[in-house]
Length: 310
Image 1 (cartoon, rainbow, N blue to C red):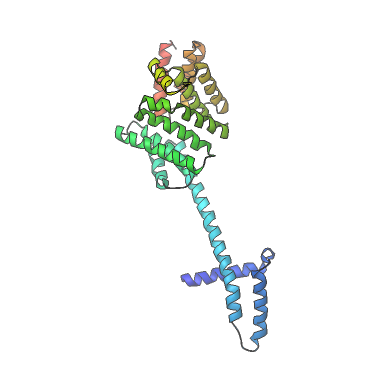
Image 2: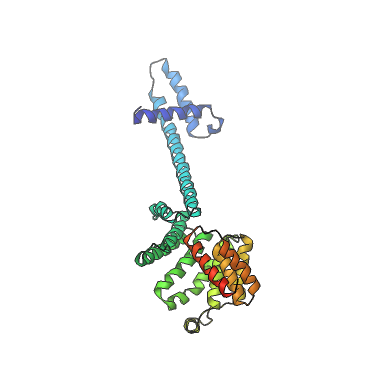
């Protein structure tokens, strides 16, 4: 069947649906259809056929066909988005970092924030692989920042976009220097807090806010001086505050992340609670190592346990 024949078949098929459905008998075009068809029957006997049926009816059916096809395209596009996201989340859960990046980078120009923040995460994860060169690591970190910023621009109400923007802007501070990194401190905290406000059950965002507190609790004296120069009220925190966020993250989603277990152990260590520190460091050591990061955390937990005599 040719393209033209397929088009007519679709129009005629829609005509059958429209003529039998009570839902389409509305004002305007349908009434015009029935009037035209009545006049057609009246003129048929005198041999004047065709025109009144052909022109008034088919434009309406053609419009309905267009509307049907447009609706079908929208449904298909939505299905495609959901299919890609489902595949991406599966690859992320399986630790397939490179495959995930190559799947999502095809959508780097997308207007969909769900693609973009996932691409930011994938770019960052790829940058952190031990097999990634220093040059590629830097490039991927800046790419991740760009994708996270774009995701936030597309959807300011996305908790994940706020979270990954906060993480990525902190990451590029490692390349921009200590002054820039500290200067972005309040921006990072603000976006993490917004992410948690939008999704109080996001254990990762709560964990990262704990990392923010831990970092400022242990900030070296010379970095404190830089912070004092940049802000009237320099950012600061305590190990108790950091511990509170790590415990909250564990409450929201128990055993969700090996690093949260490690940071609980380190926080208790800084607070001189050896018993609790041993407990959480042991959990970090025994956590199944699915990723390179898990392996690094396992190694650090083992070393810290040795220093505690565990």
